[in-house]
Image (cartoon, helix red, strand yellow):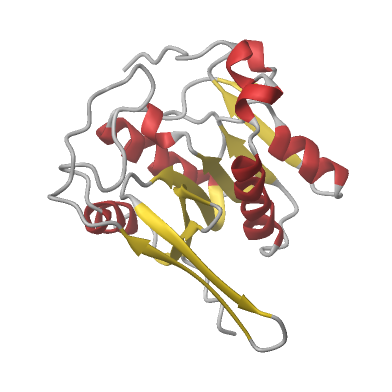
Length: 212
């Protein structure tokens, strides 16, 4: 399947794109990847390139891959056919990108990500389930910060908006299905939503025993 870019470079203008909530999500991107202590990282779909720039500033080697040469990625091509040998990178990551492909194509891209990684894949995806964020902070006593699902009459149908072909917890894409389908490729270690930006749900996959 031939893929075309969906947005121009101007989509990533700082004042429009990098809101405070997105900065919080970026922190989780860096934290999840850095915790794995990788020597080589591949990011699929770098967007404005903030993740790579921050990682490089902090001493990590990151290469980027995208179909749009306007974004100046290190490698250009289709995410469903990565031009790398098996296990080339310690960590392969992709943040808010796979939903830009039809679901079956997204799974093919994920298989490729797993193939070229040495055992760690970190991704985030949009989670459409509406939630309330509740916080309670009593200094030196207790801090609570949790997400409460909002009441709803059921999952909404997803309509392609020019960018997203699907989203978690839209009709036909419940979280349980996403976990089941992606975990067939590589085991899921954990998943969570970013408190400051619940629309972003993170997943860490690995077939490496992290208990030893």
